Image (cartoon, rainbow, N blue to C red):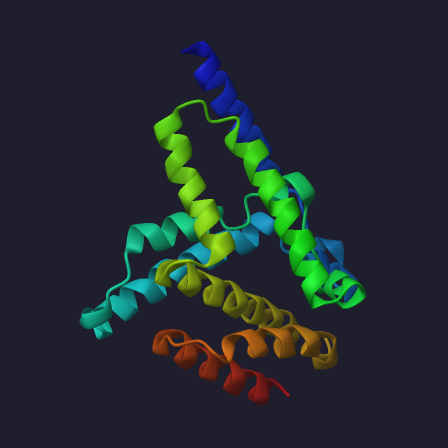
Length: 206
């Protein structure tokens, strides 16, 4: 029993490093380190948006309900492996090419997830957490896809907050373009409607 909880503590100690790891993309465009969100900041906001928009979706579209617990589990853990390898910036994708980048990222995420899950000695709990991590990696459910769209939406929310502080909009065009490319196929109206608000807000700022 002592070993079980000692390993859980080790897991928590790994996860808590997300509070200290800055998001690399904002560093690339020159945001001062004092204003750069951590990976944990991003994960929290993604989880909050996921819960809020999941509840809204379920209220507006009761015929296609999303499992809120599954959405939240995936949203909370979706960037957890980054405590092992930090954050991938889009520049790496541009250097490697999309296919090689996706292959490399998949291998790193799988390795990091396996290492983290090895710290959970209770097999039932490990299975539940593995399902959440694997679900996000493979996007094999509506809930996982929903969170993946929210993840991109949150990038735009953060970019817009920096633009509102006075940073030049051109710094964030790449974030907008890549996120919009991904969100172009989003089938969830609650996300698309928020996206419209963000685009209108950006137009108002500039």
